[in-house]
Structure formats: C-alpha cells, structure tokens
Length: 575
Image (cartoon, rainbow, N blue to C red; front, side, top):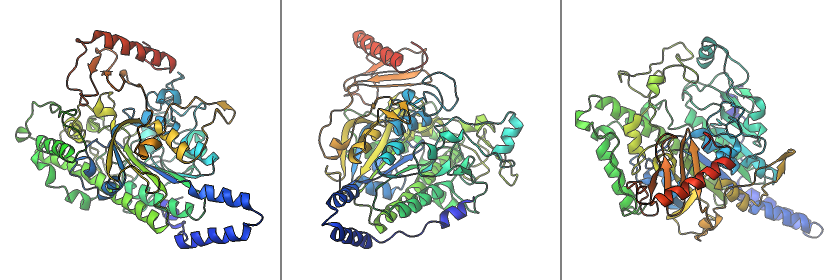
C-alpha cells in the first residue's frame, strides 16, 4: 500500500454544529427511559482528546518560545495560550525516552535501558516488555480511539544476515516484510491506527522501515517529505476520529530535526544568512531572550562556557558549511511547526480544539553526533532508490540539505541548541535530559495563559496525567501479565495552577552515565569510570559549580540512593 492511497482514504469530519445537534437530539429521545445511557454519553464527551507531539533531537532553546531564532509561530501560539515548563526531564536518548513516555515507568523497567538490541537481560531487552502497558493500551481500554504517526523505535530491530543484504534493503533495492517482530508493532501495543517508521534513522525524502499498520509502504509519491507526511496523516486521523463522540488519543512522534540534515529548499532559504554570525552570537542571543522573556532566572541559570571554545568563529575554515548545517536544522524545525499548525487548524475545523490536551516536547537534547564519520551501514543508506550515491561529507565538502547528503550539526552547534546548558543527547547532564515542554488545553488548563512552571516533571508522568484527565485506570494486570506499578505522577494540579506533590527524587542511567536528583541536589557522572560531580541544583541549574569536594557526605548519601535504585530496577552496569 502506498502513502497516496492512505492520504485519500479519509473523508472530512462532520461539522461541530452537527455533532452538538446530534447530542441534543439523542438526549431528548432517550431522556425518559435511558437516563443512565445519557449520563454515560455526557461523561464520555467531556473527557478530553489527547495529542502528544514529540520532536527528535530538538535542543532546549531551539523554539521561538524558548528563546530561539527559529520561526515556530504555531508552537509559540500553543505556549502563549497554554503553559511552559522549565524543569521537565526526558531520559537522555530516543529509545529510553520513548519507553518511559509510553509506559509511565523508568525506561529500564519497560525493558529499554539502552537501544533496540535484545540482550536477554531484564532492563535491556530492546523492546517494551510484557510487564508494561502503553498509553494507548490504557486509554483504549477506557474508551478512547488511539492512533500514532511517526517514529516508533521501541521494538527489536530485524537485520539481514550479511552487510550486503542489509545495504540492499536500506537502499530500497530489496524488500522484506518485517522491520521488527510484528507483535511489537504499535498496532499490537494498543494503537488502532499507525503510519510511520519502525526504526529510528530515516531518509526524510524516502524513509526506511515505513509501514501502514503492519504493511510495509513500498513506495512514496514524488516530492514526499516525511515531516509533512507525519503531520498530514495526524490531521487525517483527527478528522476520522472526530466523526464519533468518543475521545481520541494521538501520538505524533516526529523524526525532525534528527540527522540526516534533510530539508526543503524554500525552508532552508529562510535561514541562509542567520547562522553566518557564528556560534557565540547565536548562543548569547538565545540566552538573553531566555532571561529577558522571563523563561529562565539568570541567577539560577548561568550561561555555561561554550563547548570547545578553542576555535573562534572568525577562525573557522568551514564557516560556510557550518552555517548551512544549522540553517538546515532550523528549516527542519520550521517545517515541523508548519505541519503542527495544520493539526491545530484541523482541530479548529472539527470543533475539537477547546477540549483537546496538546503536549509538545523533545526526546532528548540536541545531538552532538558526527554521522558523517559513521558512513553507510546498519540504518544509514549508501544510495537513493534511483541509485544516486549518498555522500557522508567528513571533510565538509558536500553541503547538507538534499537527499544525497547525510550530515549532522556536530558538537558546537548542539551546544548552542541546548543553551544555556552544557552537554547534549545521551548524557545525564542537563543539556541531555532537559526538554522544552508545552501544554495547551483551553478547557482544562486554568493556570494563567502563557505562564511558566518551574515545577519538576518527567516523561513518565504522562501516563498518570492522561489516565487522570481521561478517567482511565492503570491496571495491575493486563493480557494475563502482572504489570509494574506506575512510577509517574499526574501533572493535572500543575495545569490548574497548583503546587503538586511531585517526585522527591529522580534517577537515570544510559551507557554508564547517570544521575540522581532531589529538589536541592544533583549527583551526575558521564560514565561508569568518571567521578561523581555534585551540584546545588536548586540554585545552580546550569551545573556550573561542582561542590562534591565540599559535601562528601551528600555524595555518599546520593550515591547510595542511586545504587539502591539501580539494584531494584535491573540497571547495568552493575554497581
């Protein structure tokens, strides 16, 4: 099945007026003898729709409403009419964050401590284990329609038995029916409908691992661009779901702005001159806007030293290439925002916007990865479907943007994207785990419009939040399996402008990097071989002053807490 038939299969939803009329007529017809049915219908219709939108490798300060220069008017509008968070946490990398977000658990409890390889070890199974339930499974059980579009990346990846066969598959020269075990696909974990990529990395113009339900999408139309397809399919699902009175849950998992740097020429053109001023100017401008717009308190959030400050922009021999790379990164975010605008418009046209909870966040900090040096292999093609060679410009001799170039922004621009923090994706420092988070729900958020919350939240809180507002029950057993108790906590009180009873402590581990955080302290390290660093995080939120030597007793206490958590949650490496 091709994407063309997918887009043309959905008809326009009934106008909101007709929906209201239908409810009123039903109430009149059945009011005498069906009082119980009327009440049930009213209760169901009052529950909000829920749309969870996640970007991939978006930096903390990339969005306009978080201090960035990228044009994101639609996300800015959601923020200005909703709520922004400044202390919201992911788990530092794509697969672990998705596992935690989908299940309401720490990612190791859900089976994905690392990536998607099956190791046979409890915390590192590479797929969502049977002792977890997904948001879709919980909400579907309570009467919600459920749909997903975009990046799945929480199932064991199937690979071919030789590198040659794998490359032929990646290059669309051969086809195979399964990208992971079918029983691990979204439609077998609670989602009624799914269109997207099962794996993580994609060619934005011709994605690998693209499926509709469980069927591989074997060809895409001319001028296909994956970000547009994700957003437009989301709009089609909304139109279909809104035909019925039952609420819907929609998970929109973008691949933008994850490398490769692929964008449309008209979007790149908007930022051709923007980044020619260099790393320092952009980073300092972002920091000033974050402070001047009241998003961050400058006394608590210091601007950390720029990463590898050894190379001044004026001395950079690759200025043209580097400026273009960040322009493409911005263009990818811009295009994502344009499509989110179409989702908002669809909600308005179907009369669903007022009672739809929309949340937006990133799966981790911006990526420092140099995908050029990896070259083709595993999930990175060597040729397009038509046989054109794909360049991996290690020497920055091929400009990023088109399908025939696989490139990434690198460490210095990633540091800019995560302003004011240090570090990035994969690390337990704030630049890796800090995410912009926006919540918009006209009918349900009573906190002041455009307000900023400093309360601490975590991606595992979405399960508790959505179950709370959707009046759904988190199960103790599901499909005959004992389910791990819920770890997240509802954000509903924050939506109402109240102080919630949050997490007294949070933990993380990825590839040996780790942290333990209380409201006052944060203990963190890069890997299992480096010493702990300690920060007074309530006043030093950019992690600028390591006080581990001054407070060895705090280090010992928090280290002990982390060791206990690790032992209880199948976390490796073993302490």
